[in-house]
Amino acid sequence: MTADDLRRNSDNFCYRHPDRQSFVLCQRCLRTICPECQTPAAVGVICPECLRDQQKAASPAQRKAERRWSRPRALTVSGSRPIVTYVIIALTAFVYLLTLIPGIGTSIQDTLLFFAPTIYPELTGRFEPWRLLTTALVHGGFFHLALNMLALFMIGSSLEPLLGKARFLTLYLLSALGGSVAVALLSFLTPVVGASGAIFGLFGALLVIGRHIGANIAGIAIVLGINLVIGFVPNFNVSWQAHIGGLVVGLLVGFIFTRTRSSRQRGLQIALLVAVGVGLIALLLVPVLVPQLVLR
Image 1 (tube, rainbow, N blue to C red):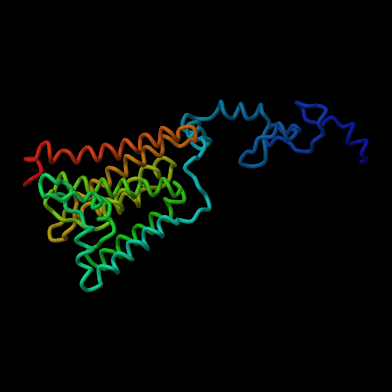
Image 2 (image 1 turned 90 degrees about the vertical axis):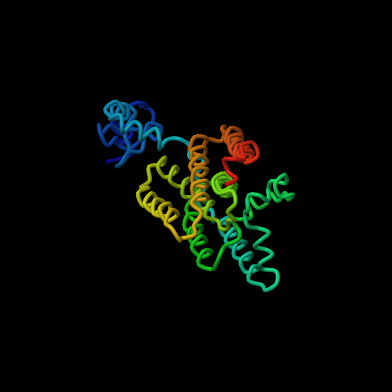
């Protein structure tokens, strides 16, 4: 067959654009289609008419899945390393090593742990708000530190590349703040140390985001449930209040992230995150306004 034979054969031209030569066939109707008319399918490509027929025949579940996966994935930051996770782990480990130094270790821990009365100058004459966040840097022992940092590494390695550094750090800090606020409301006179509130916030966000993108979250839910139950076991010396506070904030922040994913919603996302932080700070007024509820 010569080149002239190929040019004269109408089957070698797109059926929608007769002036465009092509040798690609629609996998459903087997008509010739040019690159402009080709839509990738599970195997090969299909023409616009077959695409419309396929969409009409799709079930509601299939159409819902197509809409979900065709949305812009503003959350995805592929290929990035969890730098913030590494920095938090390194900083927390450094603070732990400082607490082991004789003479100053106890002083550092006492300055950074969270004790609710120290943020109410009208009660103690002291105002040390940094404790709301620095409590996540101090731990009661090596195993306490190791378990929290292992959980942070495992969750952060998956969640930080998905969210990006700024969103991940915001989630961590708001979750730590949520844990401290819950302790102030539910266990006012109990000193607390550890990053458990922040870790539970990461768990909560991962649960919401994983559910939203269609991932299998059964394993996450089981691990989260076990850790929550442990918090209520007597003699474990675990602050279930911080766990609950961090988890609730993490669920809320995760929901905000999933509903404000596109770049045009960036301002709304920031505003909602600021509102969460302001709301948590506002809750700290409860011990002042209704002291009989917490001073017990």
